[in-house]
Image (cartoon, rainbow, N blue to C red; front, side, top):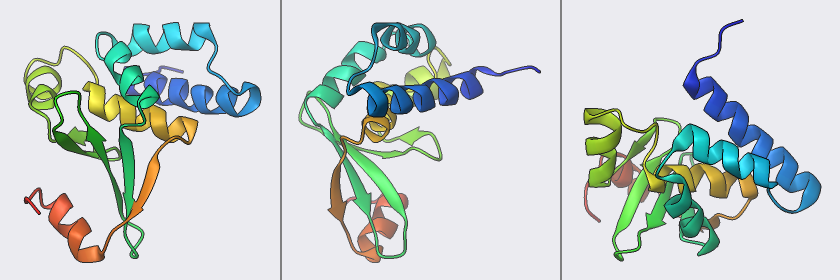
Length: 137
């Protein structure tokens, strides 16, 4: 059976969630696995997770998105299921150059979700629609 890198990444994040629930921490070998699969964005993403910079926005219709407060103070919107982030690095490094699988904000959203460390924020359906249309509030 052949595995692709996105499948391996998804399996790794699933294992991070499982081991965190089991042990209360992420073992070093899984942290090394994250660094191996995701590369340079891993350490900055883990810093964002440690700083509790990730919010999960939930709407009454069940839609959700993530917002990540970057180190610069800018807030970036991430659509984890669509693998999209509004930061410039996403377009440059992920889309244009294909240097990495995810930017640090999107990786932080995935890891925060896996660890259950997202701050949950309820928003209206209209606010969620604006976020998903990538308009400014």
